[in-house]
Amino acid sequence: MMHHSPQRLSVLAVSVLVALSACSTVRQTTTSTSGTSTSNTSPSISAETTAKARTILKEAGLRMSTDATKAYSYDPPGSLNTNDKPIEFQKKRTFAFPTAGISFSNEFDGARLNDVRMVDDSTFIGVLAPENAPVNYSAWYAFKVWSAKAPAKVSAKTIRLTLTYLEARHRYVPKLSRKPSADWHSWKTIDSAAYKVHYDSAGRETTSATLRLAVNADTLWVSGHELFTSNDFEAWSANLAKLPFVKKSVLGTSSLGKPLIRLDIAEAAPNAPCVVIVSRQHPPEHTGTLALLPFVETLAGDTPLAKEFRQKFRVFVAPCMNPDGVDGGHWRHNAHGVDLNRDWNNFNQPEPRSVRDALLKMRDSLKTRFVFGVDFHTTQHDIFYTVSNPPMNTARDSAEYMRNPAYKQYNAASQERSKFVETWLERTQALFPTYQVTISDSPRTPNGATSGRWFDRELLAPSLTYEVGDETDRELIRQIGVGSAKVLMEMLLKQ
Ligand SMILES: [Zn+2]
Image (cartoon, rainbow, N blue to C red):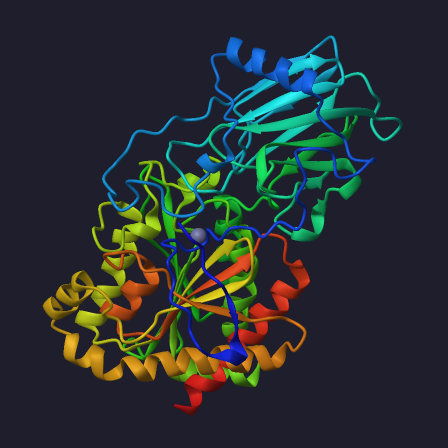
């Protein structure tokens, strides 16, 4: 399976994708070695340690994949079947090693650490496994570690921890915090000298990476991205809902019964044209949230532009569509083992169904016109996935659209919708000359099973998937979130 070639916006020719999945692009590694260390100062893992890990993992009844090609960078088989699948709930526990004076724990929301083994009193192996498999390349981890022996802030014991993934490659650069909060400033990316990704002979990340960590009695949190759980979404939403024109309600419940948050920015008439914003269908995708928060805050802002916008337009926000996956530290799926962004045709899962029902109620009862739809995600590079036109590129698509009563209207307006999204991207690019806005045609799931395609098809809304890179500078993400929201308001007001 090939992956796409992103193009600069200035080219404006939209590439045809072969890849089938959003948020799953393959990292272009610049480091290609034959599995040897790329830096003298980086921690390394010896053949002896690797062998020992294999023995330990085998004794623990765990397999360590040695084949990095088993990591899916696109939809793995069965992704489009969105019926419930069994998942393995992670056992919550503290892994204590008294002889080394070191403890690890996954006992918090968002954590993922399936097992730990001690090699010697300063060398450990952490085992990470997904909620179910096959699953694509999104190997999440988050845990905390402390030393019972070392006094806090006085001295620290240095340990080496090798993260080993079953059926996946290492992906996220570790973020560290001694005092985590919902604010990304409370986290810091690990020092590059204390972090080594192991590569295979083709230059791809292998199934392991080694971290050197300074551990003392003051708990150290280690995570693939800054942690932002369903509680943080609740707190952020409740805070925003203090504004008189923001209403917070419950869309429905998740697979495990958690509330699905709905926010309405509702100053205009109930049937006013509406912008739709959704996010976090995929649990680890926090940088998408780092764009969504300032985007929504800007639409709800105290500026003349936002005030004028809110007199004419409403905004519907489902900021956390997969709270079970987020809090469970899942790699990709909900508690029913399903990729929610492949369920927008079948609607087998309660989370997309709740959003669909609310939006169709607005469309059908209030005759709401939807003027824009955006779904925030994270991938390895910043990219905006647009919905190409004409939409019908396969017989299957064609049959689907022909069945849709809105087909004629859809087809007539499709070019206009494309143009709107392109102009929005051009103008956002103009605000950030040093930032490369990359666009690509939305991956073509065979039955249009992504949110973006559903917004386009059923709501007739110009729509796109807003993908933020794993390691994009957090302040830049915020600025682009603010800037792109301003551009959207300006464009909608001029229509
Ligand atoms: Zn995603």
